[in-house]
Image (cartoon, rainbow, N blue to C red; front, side, top):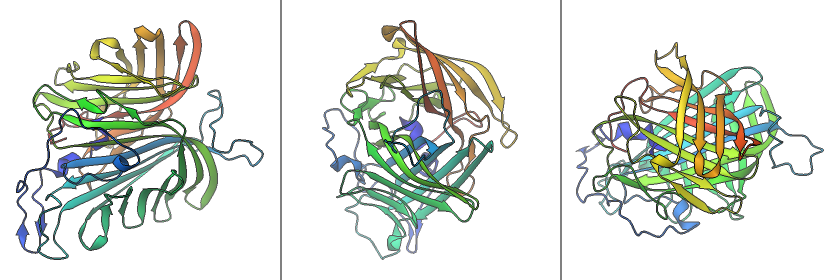
Length: 386
């Protein structure tokens, strides 16, 4: 959900500058998100510059690869915790519509940002990096005809065989080089991908997920490079609208369960901590069919907290999730307490984005899994466009 845009949206409040001076943001205006758009794939993996804000978000759980395995891209069973968790997210913030003529090669149409995070669970360490670049001179960009988004040597793209290729490295500190293969069709959230975020016109996004991708490739931490396999999740969302003024942040959950189902939930949080009515979710069955979940169809209760020494923010640190219609009761626990990103050099947003383990029951039978949780608005109230 819009949590995928936790970092980019702040930049929408800045006044972008070119060599010729400030660029007018609303001539012509960006397109509004309206119901009825039909999402088509693979075309809609690519960029949508007619909308102001867009993000492509990947998270996943990785295991050191075993050469003897018959399925190198498959995740081990839930009893075997992952060795690594990763996040790679690209954000696009529109400054001018694509049909606006460029005054020069330096003229600005979009600003791009990216966040890379790698949790090394064996070493109990969390690594994070960030990038920011304008789209001038091809230094950063996103294709509209075929999916490719990049900032310098960080990139995500769709290969000819339908796999997603991710590459990002932060000097000699940490890196990911992964191939992700979807094992389920895109899951469209809301109403056929039209996802409401409020009651006012335009408070919505187009939102879908690839909720389960097999992963192979390598990760590097310092001088150590290892081959890995695992499972990943991809979100793509694009919008022009704004969040309601009474919201301070959101909690987002993307969970992969060992029975082949997935659960996505988001809670739009008001200042008093209560969820807004537009909070919602999706339950995805083994065959990829999506059941929308309204706010009253699930519950999320946090029963522990963690305080960041870096930001002073106090975050929820364990959750109990219930979906009564599926007799589903889950407990989520972070793999590391500190999975906070403080993005001072790009977007200025501080948020917690981390891997979690999942255990619980479905209709009384044990179930387990893994997932990622994103928490925004805990360091400071979130006040920006989507």
